[in-house]
Image (cartoon, rainbow, N blue to C red; front, side, top):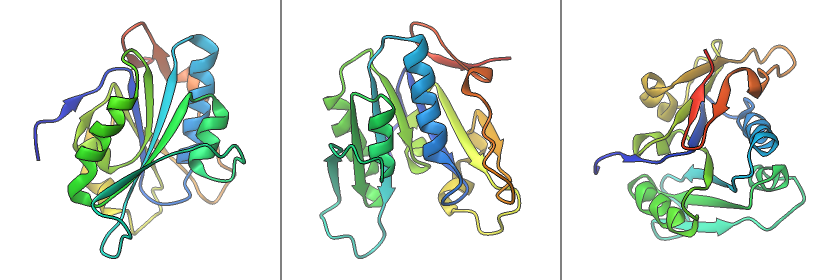
Length: 180
């Protein structure tokens, strides 16, 4: 693995497991950014495939579906200029991500949904959604838990109650930071 790449104006959202609210949080972040900034926002979702992937190393799909039925479509509907879905094996994550970065204009805001990307990228913020009651955390989440700038605990036994983005996230001209 090469040296970690610093990506400014980037937020990565990961999670301890599936269906925990990552995309909901991401769409809330996108809408919040749109309300306070004219910067263009680009979305990236990274999915790691193990074993029987039907492509060589990685593929990049640009979302154009506005149905709102997929995570990437929801990101697009929330205000992203473009959204890319990186489908990759573990060995090609970094290469695929760097290829997507070449498509994104400098000074743009980048919002990513991924655990694994945090192994290759240093974002302004890495937010991890965690279900404390979950006993089978994704290995990718356990590997990057100590890199989280903010851990948001989710109670799956109650209605999804994510914090209001404006209570924890701020953006100046060059970077995101936590409030407080």
